[in-house]
Image (spheres, rainbow, N blue to C red):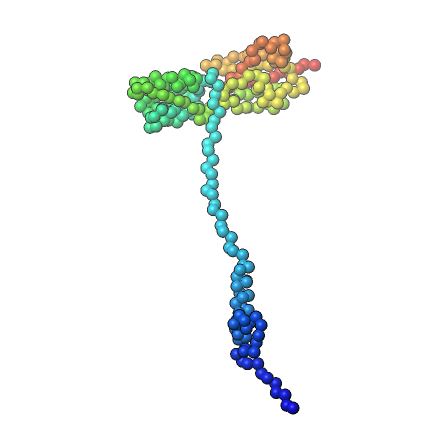
Amino acid sequence: MIHTKKKAPANGAGITGPLRRRGIAPAGLLAAVLIGCGGLAQAQTPAAPVAEPVAAPAVAARPASPQPSETYRLRPKDVVHVMVFEEDDLNTTGRIDNDGNIFFPMLGQATIGGQTVQQATATMESLLHKYLVHPQVSIEIVSYAKEHFTILGQVNKPGIFDFPDEGSLNLLEALGMAGGYTKIANASKITIKRYTSGTETLIKVDGKKLMNPRYAAMPVFQVQPGDTINVGEAVF
């Protein structure tokens, strides 16, 4: 008996199972697989990172200068900002000249040097009262004039030092800025050279008394800009 080998129909009619049920012909099988793989690859491709918005750099605010004590008196080369309430065109920043004057709109020269901030405020309000009904003025110190003092002799760090902005410095604070006494210092022998209106004055201070509780009631010597302090040496 002769057996004849049957060929599978070219159109896939003899194929059974899921491919036939889904209606996918063998001819399109490879294409379907390739399409499926492409879709899978596309699904697995990570999305492009979204760029984060870049914030604009913050503008650093100008640090405010420390405001002085109530007893501080304005001096030449101090820079002040004068504000007049509801009169923005009059607001002015200026440097006090050697005569204690500041240029101010409408007034020209206004003398405020040697006055406390409170006194200078009252002065400006009085001057502006000629032109405004109820002027309200405020004054802020923008920067202080740089003043110096010198300390020499038996201290650990002799030299020239900047005077504090608030304008107040006693002898003990000055000695501290200079690193204190050396081992051979004579604290009871301190001299201060000071010029006042062109005249030299020599002041002697006993530093030991400043540290002695028995003299606690004694006021501590106040240093002034331009002073030259000299700490003497102990004799053995």
